[in-house]
Image 1 (cartoon, one colour):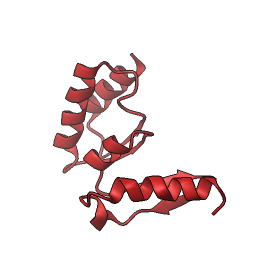
Image 2 (cartoon, helix red, strand yellow):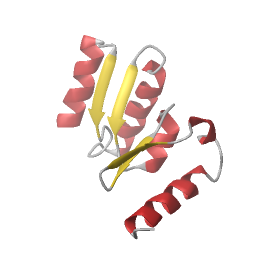
Image 3 (spheres, helix red, strand yellow):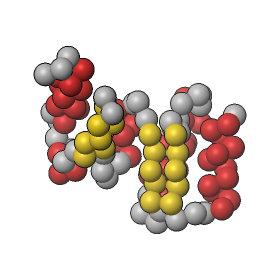
Length: 101
């Protein structure tokens, strides 16, 4: 319910910058798909910054992706977003860092 209210508030207020924390978590499938469509439709006119643990959501919605892992933030090459091996590379990177490589 909290996520739904948050989404409604940014629709009403129409801020230039929208900050969302796990925006689709706890929403049912139908509402999550509608919210995803909404975020895609407004991203041209707004700066949307959100955190997520769902890699597919990030790659579907984002123009830029940063990963926060083990207290370090890393920007990823946005030119690689459409590359089919992009997600595999992120997973490999996170596994290496987790094991101290």
